[in-house]
Image 1 (cartoon, helix red, strand yellow):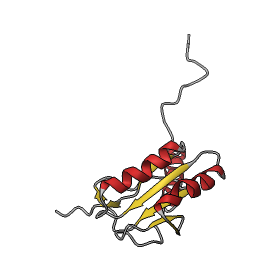
Image 2: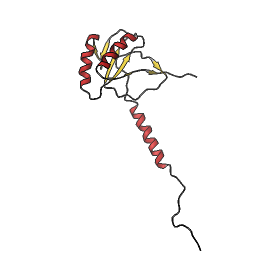
Image 3: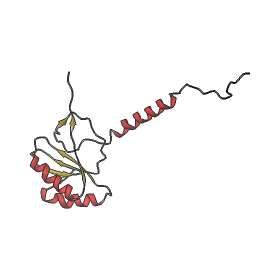
Image 4: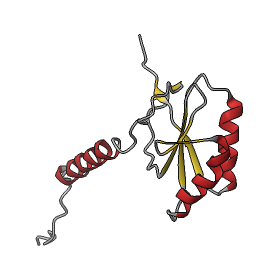
Amino acid sequence: MNLKSKHQISTTFSLASLTDIIFLLLIFFMLTSSFVTPSAVPVDLPSTKVSKSLITKQVEITITKELEYYINEQQVTLEEIETKLKAKLEETENPKVLLNIDKTVAVEYLVKVASVANKLGAKMAIATEAETVED
């Protein structure tokens, strides 16, 4: 008497769909990494060993080494920052601020601007340049 099963279980696994998903993810990360662009106002950013994060900036605040303040490339004074920033943040539903601060600027000025953005309820990120690793 022959008792073989009519349905045989296949032990092979196809990786074709997995490679498609990996290539799609690679393309996605390559495209989204170009969303964070350097500021048009020239500042010498501090360096870090961490690579660029994927940040979608909505409002950009820049402080140059001459202590000039810019909101989205528009020059403002320190006293005007709160009112101008509040107006910019009210235009968006999920406020995010990218701080471009020259590495020679004292931390005191970073804290002043960051406290204003924090008071207005914005999420903040500090822009940095990636450090080149030499062997």
